[in-house]
Length: 158
Image 1: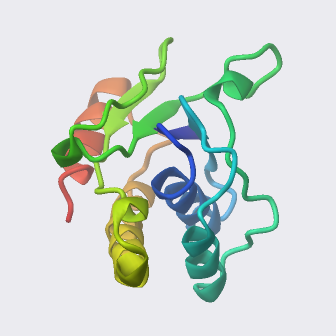
Image 2 (image 1 turned 45 degrees about the vertical axis):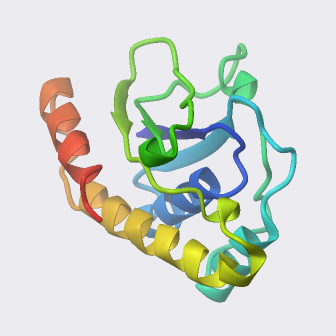
Image 3 (image 1 turned 180 degrees about the horizontal axis):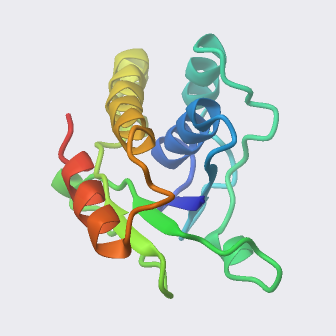
């Protein structure tokens, strides 16, 4: 099951969820992240937090969603956007037929540097609960409608 996590900059939230899904999915899912307008670098607090929580950050990089639309790219089963709706951010839209969900989380990178540690930990914890809820589902055997309904509910977990 391939999951693409999208946000605009691909430096914080999408990187966190990609890592959470790959780390806890234990090969059951393959998560990727990308941005519609990537910053070109992963936020240093994302890297610090993930490393502190035992995630492999060796392959973490900010990348464009164009990589996943190119010939030979893995076909996505799910696309999850993580832009924060309260911040009035414009979330990218992914064409095609994957099941889509929106799991909005406020951008921790928008916090002042003195608040980064708490803001990133909050985003990580919310996304971690959502990733765990997804991985608790029998996603391999669910139909698109069931999966879509569950993904919507998971996106409301705080």
